[in-house]
Every structure is written in structure tokens, then in C-alpha cells.
Image 1 (cartoon, rainbow, N blue to C red):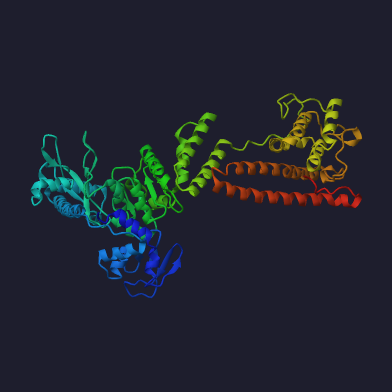
Image 2: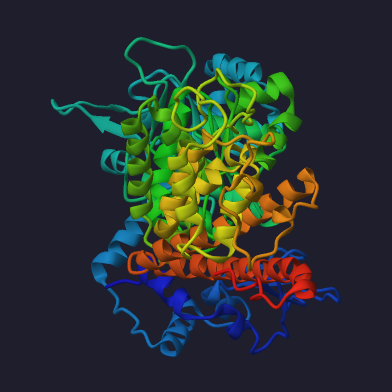
Amino acid sequence: MAITPQWKDELRARITLSTLVMRSVKLTRAGREWKGCCPFHDEKTPSFYVNDQKQFYHCFGCGAHGDAISWMVDHAGLQFMDAVKELAAEAGMEVPAPDPQMAKRAEQRASLIDVTDAAQAFYVASLAGPGGKAARDYLEQRGFSPAVMREFGFGWAPDDRQAMPKALSQFGEDMLEGAGMRAAKEAGERYDRFRGRVMLPIQDARGRVIAFGGRILDKREGVAKYLNSPDTDLFDKGRTLYNLHRAAPASRQTGRVVVVEGYMDVIALANAGIADVVAPLGTALTEMQLELLWRMTEVPVLCFDGDAAGQRAAMRAVTRALPLLGPMRSLSIVRLPAGLDPDDLIKQQGTGAMETLLSRPASLVATLWEFERDAQPLATPEAKAGLKARLMAHVETIADPEVKGLYRRELGDRFSAFAYPPRPPRAPYSPQQGNQRGPWRGTPMPLPGLSEDARARLSGIMSGGQRQGLLAAVIAGLTRFPQEIDRHGEALSQLARHDPKSAPLVESLFELAEMLDSSPPSAICDSLGHPAPPADIRYAFLDEGTSTGAACEELAEAVSLLVERPALEAALAATIARFDNDPEGSFAEQTRLRAQLMTVDERLRAFGRRKAAPAAKGDNSAPAEDIG
């Protein structure tokens, strides 16, 4: 067995890099990183940083960069295998024994890189030669500067089926085909894979050419616009990001990495001075590519075209990323204006417009919500329920329990605000509008006054202690000011839902509201023989000496206090009920609701003390703060 990339990843994960470095370099905490003076060059101001989460060190002064293994090689002076053995012993891992087959494969890979290097030199020479004029004109028309063309290694593949074996005669057909440069028909005929295309080298994280991408100059029927090398021993498109070897150093300076749809978009942004950009290679982002991105930054920025295809690509990336999310590990999304790719936007509006979009990306959760909300018409309750089901299905794919609970809460809040918007306020009830329909039951408004039966029912509500304290006072206040019943109708309905004991009182009050009139002498009062408020409760809204405006405001405060506590208690009970399915979210919600309950209780006590003050002067009745 050989030392595979996966084995080295496991080794790095078991070693805390800052602890290793601090054995010989003094480091101090700097946010989520550690900093100190670089051991690789003489400096007085710290520019050397160690990031345990991303498992690398970097010096912004001299450019030194590496992981735990390279630290042991570059700083401790060990050979590679000695460094690996020492770290493995510390991590409690066994070093794999040499595998002759793997060693032979590594040797073959090295030979294949010789092929791709030679092919790249051939393509560059072809672009500069007489046969490359059309390609040079195309690149000049695209606005690519000579410096960018040299940096990205543009070349030209002649439109010749046998150009490659003639130019790279030192390599056999098997090696040319193994490197992805040649292909074979079923009949056995071999031919050049890339013909008549502008060529771009695809490089690994170390900058070595491992594959190619080619673009045709003119659209031709039945010919793919872009063509990439097939997967080979050198190249795995699902594990490779185009331009990674250039974007990684730039990302360490900007703290950002941008992902665009194709390599021509990468070069367009680089041509405009935006260097921290990578692209997948003809496929949607894979899990391995996401891992490469998260090694560079916590929240990569995905930039997609504004058309329907770009939106679908964004959603594919979102669904691929959801199971992998974790604390400080997410994605953000930028969608370009419809019909524009990065090159078009920069040419039409300038680099500043592109930078502005990149500085204001949408969060992953917002993108997920907007995509599912806009996916189908939502004109019926069933369609809205379908939206919620789709959102929760996405949430269930998230592996991290903390992130899952927070996504469930966030998307649930967005859905509730969308599906249950606040109802518009009801028009205030005016007793003079006798011909309009009733505020509660849609029936004609009856003439003012109370029948004997209605008076008896209301007396039953107010007597016998069915509900004492604040509820009794509020009922009495609303019989004194019937016009306020409509104003507080929604709050009283909510009270009836959350406090079943109060439901008969509220329902009776709504029925009687149609027969109450606030204009004397029809208003409910003692002088007319109507039921009086409880004698042991003193509130301003029950005092004949209080002005109507002040009394109604006091009554509104009493209604608010009366309704809030049962509603909070109901919400708390529902939160406790879901504890088994969402312990983290439930616990946080319980804490918030209990704090609100304490606040309401304090307001109730303060309200009771304030209203009890007049009573203390005149009699020895029971204190009004006993309003539960």
C-alpha cells in the first residue's frame, strides 16, 4: 500500500498544526488563527500565520506556505519519509508499506506529465505560427491582454487528425492516448482528440499540466463548443478545479474565492484584475471540489449566469452542499443580470459592477428559499403546503444537527411570514352605521339597546366569579365602551383560542356587541340596571371620572396583558412538545419564551399595583394585583 492523498489527509487531521509550530516559534492568538514572526526570514513585525482549521501556515512576507508535513521538511530539515514517520508516530498511525504497483503507477504518472508538458509546448508554438492567426484574432477580439494569454498558456490545436504523433514522436501511441491526447475508433483508427480549437492547459494544485480544454472558433453543427480531456491517471475532473494553483495564493490575500461556470469566465475575470477565481470542468460542483473550496475560505462565492440554466446550476450546487454544511462552512450565491456572463458584464458595465455584485452575495438559505418559492405557483393552500414539504425535505439532508435545527427554524419563519401574512386591521366600529353589516357575524346591525334576555346573560357572565380579576375588569370595561370591542376583536379571539376557560365569555361578548351602544343613555351602566363591574376591582377605565380617551387607552393595555400570557404559554407548550425531534432548537426557543413570560408577569404586577393605588385610599378591598 502506498501513501495516498487520503492517508495524508487523515494524518494532517490528527495533528494540530499550531501545536507543532509552537514548539519552535512563538505564536499568539489572532482571531481564528495564530500569528508570529516568520522562521523562514528575518522580520520584526509578525506576518506568519497558522490556521488549524485549514491545516496550513503562510507567511505574507516571504510567501512560505505549507502543511504539517512540509513544516517538518522545510523547517526541521527532515526527508519526506522521515517527516511522515515522525508525524505518524505522534498521531498514532501506521505508515503504509511500500506498494510496488503503486510505485509503478506513480512512475507512469510522471511520464504522462512529460507528455502533457510537450503537448502544451506544441499548442503554444502552433498559436504563434502561421496556422494560428484565426485563433490569435479570436483572442484579440475577446479582449484578452498578451500578459493574460501568456499567463494562462493559450495555444492552438491544428485541424489535423494526425498532428500530435508527428509533433510528439518521442512518445508512443499508448502514452499519447493515456494522457488523453489521442482517441481511437471502434475500427482501431487513432486520431487527435483536439482539432481546430483554441487550447487551454488544465493544471493541478502544483501548477503541473494534467489535461486540456479546447474551444471551437465558430459554432458548427454537431460539434461541442467546449471539449475537455477525458479522465486519465493524471486527471479526474470531479477532483480538479480550474485555476486553483493561481487562485489559492490570491484567495489568501482577499479572504475570498469565487467560483464561475467555465474557464473562459475565469480568464475574463483575471483579465479584469480579479484573480481569486476558479471553475469546475464541465460538471456540477462535486463534494471533493467543495472540500477544496472550503480549505481556502469558509464561505466561497458561487457566481452563476442570470438565465434559467444558471439558476439550475446554482440549485444543483446548493443541494450538493447541504449535507456537507457545518459551523462556519457554507456557500454564498451571486446571480448575474439575465443574459449576461462575467465577460459581458465587465465589458458593458466595467469591473466595478462585477466587484459590487461579488461583495453582496445572497446566503445559501436565502437562495434555497427563493428558488423553491418561485418554482411553482402558490395560489392554493395545497401548493403552499407543497412548498413547505420541499423546504423541509432539503433540511433533512443536512448532517450537522446544529445547522439542521437552525435551517429548520429559518425556513419555517420565512414560510410562516409568506403563508400567514398579517391580516389588515378591521375598520373601527361606528354605532351610527346602523345599516352596515355586523363586525363579527356578517348580520345586519340591530338597533341599540339590550333585551331582557341579553341583560340576563351578561349578568351571568359578570357574576358568580366565572372569571375574576383582570378578565372580569376587561369584560366590564368593554361593556362600558362597546365601540372598543371591534378594536380588540382579534386579540380577544386569540385569547379564546389559547385560554378555553375564557372562550364562553369572549363568545358571549361578541354576540352582545351587536346590541351595545356607547351613546348614553343606552350604554351599560348601573343607573340603567345593567350589570356592574366587580366591586373589588378599581381600574381607571371603570372610573366614571376618567376621560373617555384615557379610559380606552388603559383598557387597551389591560387587553394586551390579558392576551399575551396565554399565547406565550401555548407557544411554550408547542416548543416543549417538539423537543425530541429538535432538542437544540427547542431549548433555545424555550429560553426565549420563558424570558418573555417573565417580562409579561412583571408588567402584570406593575399594572396591578398602579391600578390598586386609588382603591387603597377608599377601602380595604382585595389587592388588584391578584389578577390571575
